[in-house]
Amino acid sequence: MKQRSKPKKGLARLLELAGAKKQKLIAACLLSVLSSAARIVPFFTIYNVILELLRHYTDLDQINSMRIFICTAITFAAVLLYGICAFSSSALAHTAAYDIIYELRLKLVEKLSRIPSGYFTHTTQGAIKKILSDDAEQLEVFLAHHICDIATAITMPVFTLLYLFFMDYRLALVTLAPIVISFCLLSTCLNKPDKAALQVELANAQETMQGTIVEYIHGMPVVKVFNRTLSAFQRYERDLSNFVHVVSKTAHANAKPMGAYYAFFGAQLLFLIPASLLLIPTAKSYLDFLPVVLLFFLVGSGLKEPMEDMMVKVLDSNRVIEGMNRIDGILMQDEISETGTGNPTGYDVTFEQVSFSYSEGTQAVRNVSFRLPADSVTGLVGPSGGGKSTLAQLILRFYEPQQGRICIGGVDIRNISPARLTQLVSYVFQDSFLFHDTVENNIRMGNTTASQKQVEQAAKNAGIHDTIMALPKGYATVIGEQDAYLSGGEKQRLAIARVFLRDTPIIILDEATAYADAENEANIQQAFARLSRGKTVLMIAHRLKTVERADQLLVMDTGELVGAGTHERLLKDCGPYAGLVAANERRDRWTIKRSGKGGDAE
Ligand code: ADP
Image (cartoon, rainbow, N blue to C red; front, side, top):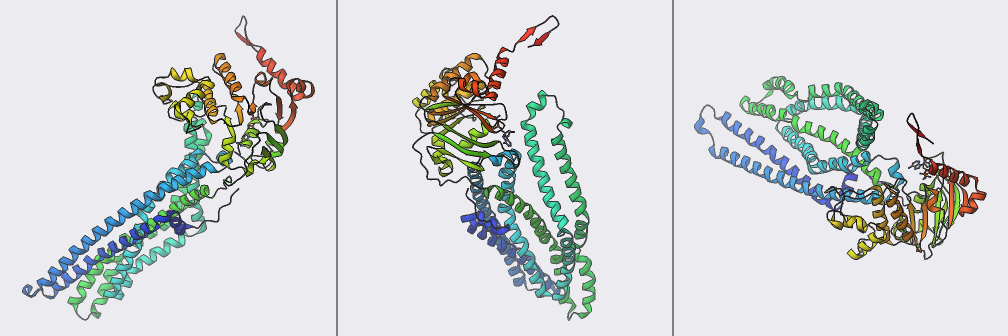
C-alpha cells in the first residue's frame, strides 16, 4: 500500500488543489481588489463636489465648473474601471474554477478506481455522491465567486477606512466602534468549542441523511414489494429527524450571538450623529466640517455591506473547507500499489495460510491454504457465508489479506501491478452489471481494441449471439432502450462473452443461482465449459451438480477450508461435504404436492 504525505489545510490546500490554475486565481483576486478601489473613488469626487457647492452657496457664479467637470470625469472613469476589472476578474475566476473542478473530479474518480474495494463496503453511495457532486460543486462556486469576493470584502473596508482616517481620524474611530463591538460579541460566542462541534455535527447529519436518502431510493422496489410504509423505514426516518433536530439545535445556539451582531453591526449613524454634534464646536470652519460629516454619514453607513459580505464568505469558506476535508478523505486513501513489477509466467494460484477479516473480531477467511493448478477446474463449495466469495475477491485484490500470501505462478500478487493482474484474472460475477450502452460496447469492455468479428465470436462462444441478433438493432442496441432488456441468464452470458474477449489465463466464475429457465441454464453451462478450456478456473458453485466433475473441489465452512479433493473422495472423507450433498439431494427432490385442502410442500 502507498501512503500519501500529510496534506496542507485551509486556503493553502485549496491553492495546492488549484495547481497550475493558481496564477489565474491570484490575477482574478488582484483585479477584484482593483475594482473595489475604483468603487471608493466616487465618494472622493462627491465629497469634492459638495465642498465646492457649499463654499460658494452664497454666490453660485463663483463655483469652479472646471473642478465639477473633472470630478464628474474621474467618477465616470472610475465606474468604467470598476466594470472592466470586475468583469475580467469574474471571467478569470470562472474559467479557473471550471478547470480546477474538472481536474479534481477526474482525480477523484481515478482515485476511487485505485483504492481497495473494501472502502466501498463502509462508505454509502450517497456519501460518495455528495463528495463528487455537492462538495466539488460547492468548491467550484467558492473558487468562481467567493474567493474574489473575499479579496474584495477584505480590501474594500480597508481602503474605505484608510480614506476615512485620512479625512478625520476621530470620526473614523467612531465609525469603527460598532463594527468592532459586534465582531467581538460574535467571535467570542462562535469560537467556543461547542459551537464549532455543532457545525461539524450539522455537516455529518446532512451527509448521513443524504446517504440514507440515496439508499432509500435504491431500495424502493424492496420497500414496495414488502409494502413498507415510510415510517417502517426506520433508518430513513431516524436520520431525517436527527438532521432536523441538529438544524434546530444549531439555529437556537446561534440565535443570540447573531442577534447581537446584527444589532450593533449596522449602527454607525447611531454613533456618528452624536459624535458629529459633539465635534462641531472643535471644527475650524463649519463649512469645511459639514461635507466631512456628510461624507462619514454616507460612507460610514455603507461600510456595513462589504463587512457583512466578508462575514458570510468566511462562514461559507468553513463549509467549503469541511467539504474539502471530505474530498481529501478520498484523495488520501491508501492505494493498491501500481508499481508491482512481478510478471508471472506460470498460471497456477496458491493460497498460503491466508487469513482475512472485514472488521476486527470475526475472520471471514481463516488460515486457508490450497493450490489451483494451471489448466484445471476447481469447484468452490460450502454453505452460504462460508467465505467463498471473499476467497475469490482476494485473488482480485479487492481486499488485502491480513495474514499469509496469494501467489500466481509463484509471484506474490502484491508484487503484481493492478493493470497486469487484470490481464491475468477475469471474474464473472453472479449478478453482472451492464452499462447503459450498446451491446457491442458492453462486450468490448473485455478488450477495447477487439475487432467487430472478435466481438461476435466471443458472443457466439458465450451462446448469446442469436439473442443479440434478435434485438431491435442487434449489436448496436442500447440495453434498456427500445424495450431491449436481457434476462438474468442472458446478462450472465453477455458477461461471459466479455471474458472470452479478454482471454485471461485465470478465470473465476460465480454461478448464478436463479436462471430463468432450463434452456438458459444449459446454455450457460456450455459457455462455462468452453470458457474453461486450457485455463486455471475457480468456480463458485451453489449447486453441487455443476462441479461434481471438476478436477478438485474445495469445501469452505465458516471461513475455514474443511475439505479438498474429488467428489468421490470428499463424499467418503469429508463430513461437511457429505452433508452438503445430502442437502442438495433433498432440495432436488423437493416438490409441491396437491392435497385435498390445498398446496403442500415436501
Ligand atoms: P459466501 O460467498 O460463502 O456466501 P462470503 O465470502 O460472502 O460467503 O462471506 C463470508 C463472511 O464474510 C460472512 O460472515 C459475511 O457476512 C462476511 N462478509 C461478506 N462480505 C462482507 C462485507 N463486505 N463486509 C463485512 N462482512 C462481509
